[in-house]
Length: 217
Ligand code: E4P
Image (tube, rainbow, N blue to C red; front, side, top):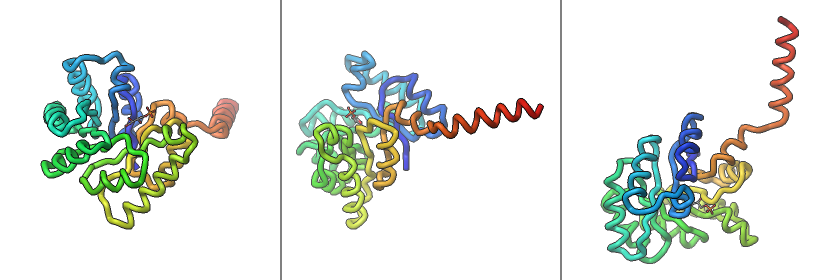
């Protein structure tokens, strides 16, 4: 399973990269705004900086909702760096754009996916990644992780090659559950990645080893 970090914060991206386990980055317009990155020039420059920090795929989201606009933006974004993946919303023109980009061998990430039907469409269109939003489904009291299980089963039965990118992850436990459910990728905040390190028995065990070592010397 690949690990992406879900942020536009450069320090956090570097911290995750330095762990040696980072496979890529996902961003969205809200995450860019959170970092105070506004205006086309600044946004493009920020994507360039992120692409220089990591070798893996960097999802950059389009703002347009019409086919021509999405394709125009995709063209500009793809020019930034070879590791840019065009993030396209699950809408009618989004699916048309993903099909066209697939024909042109441009990698895509179909975002804002909340049902198995949408995931089937994304795969049929040839999306490189499909992003079901786990946390947002949980927020409305449905079972987000169940959707990952369902999509994984359908993709396996049908032989779809689109990678399942579990998004909107809000905890370390969700990373483990997404792995169990068959996600190919998880994209998560730095805190959730770092949370995987933690276990009280590790801390207790290490303290004891260090204490015994000191006593023995
Ligand atoms: C990533 O691709 C998504 O845009 C992101 O995970 C959404 O997360 P949120 O639901 O916490 O905003």
